Structure formats: structure tokens, C-alpha cells
Image (cartoon, rainbow, N blue to C red; front, side, top):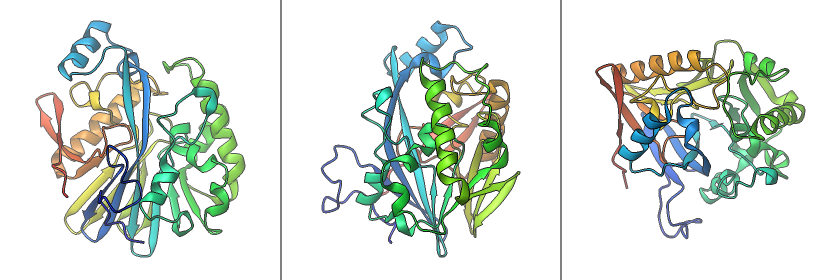
Length: 305
């Protein structure tokens, strides 16, 4: 398998208006960002703890519509040595939620030349349905290798035994769908789970660390090789979170802790100059973080063709 794939016209998926994969080198480690599509959600989800006029001002400044916001859904594939690691698995298919522009990860992995059977490890930043749902698509489990290892924080698995939705601010139907998907995922993949408490080295230079906040077991993946670094921050960072890291996202189960975690991760990235990729940043979500007085600034990378 070769992860050094960009958007050549002779490759599968070339009929797409926008390329759905983007390759990055982190020292000797290959990283491929793959889009699962977009998830349209009410703009209130960007910051339900602030006045609507503040959200409207931010959306206006960003040239975005006021009613609904398309959240990108990004996953990554990492190749380190002989390990092929999929970080998060996309939304999958949930016809009851009517989300036709999401759930494309499995097909797009195939378009990128990635055989599901070659994946040795899966890392889950957390167990929300847009991160585990792709593993529940019909026929996917049968295509995965028999000795697949799925790494997830122990606290995350424990949380979904009796999840607390008291501090979230989600559209109707989402709590039930999240709960059902997490329970089904655990039932399907119990034997492949490799639980960790605080940190786990999945492969040389690939470390997953529990942050909590968004969910109790939410984790980030740090990739490092030589002097180069990349962090996949999962749902700890959203587009609005640079200027307004204290805004509460509607899917955060502990929004105060999530804001604390977000600030800490953004400070780390601003100090070390590493690359950031996050699930819901606009594709391909590859860039740097700069400190900007008491907040931060997103500096997207120029695409490398």
C-alpha cells in the first residue's frame, strides 16, 4: 500500500469535484487525511453558551451562513513501520438521521488504494457515532484482518455503559442514536478492543493519549518522527475554537473540561510548531496554530501538489 497519493485524475474517485484525500509526510511516517463527508448541523452547536449575536458575528466574519454549518468529517491513516493505523472510522450509514453527504469513508479508503484487510490497528478518539459508525457498515467487519487491534480509552468504554447527556446541546434524535451506535459497536468488536488508561504507543512514533473533556475517554493521537510532529485532535478542536476556545460545543459531555483541554492542546501546538489535523476542521484540516494574545490563530498549510 502506498499512502503517497494525492488527487491525480487517473485515480479512482477523480470524478469528485473536491479531492477527498490528502497525503502528509511526518519524518519517516506517512499520514493520509481522508474525508468521510460533511455533517450539516445547526450553528448553535458551535457555541451554545454564548449569545446568538456573538455566533452571528463570527459566522458573518467567516462568510458562513447563519442557519446551518457543514462540519467536515475527517479520519486519518498512518503508516509507521509495518503498522497501518486507521484513526477513527467515520459515520457509517444511519438512514434515520438522513445524512446523505456523510458516511463515505469506506469507499474513499478504497479509492485511495487502501485495503481494509491491511489495517493492523484502529484508534478511536472516542465512541461517538461519527467516529465508530463506519465499522458497522454491512460487510466491513468481514473485510478486516483477524488480529485487528482497536485501541480506545478504558474510560470511554466505561462511559458508554450509562452515558450522561445532561450537559450536551444536541439536535433531537442524536442522543438516542449515539447511545445505540456505541452499544452496538461494543457488542460487535468486544474481542478486538485494546483498552488503555492514559497513554498507549500504537506503533513507533504513534502515541494515543486520553484527554477527556469532549467525552471522558476522548483521546488525541500524536505522530512524531525526527523533528516533525502532527497531532490528530479528534473533537477537541473546532473551527471556532481558535478565536473562542471557551465556547461550548453542543456535543461536549463536559464542556468546561473540554474548553480546558482545548486551550492546553492549542498552547502545545503553538509552542512546538507541530501540524494539527482535527475531525471537524475543513478538509484537509492540515495546518499550524499560532498564539494570538489570549486566544489562537489557525494557519492552514498551503496544499502540496
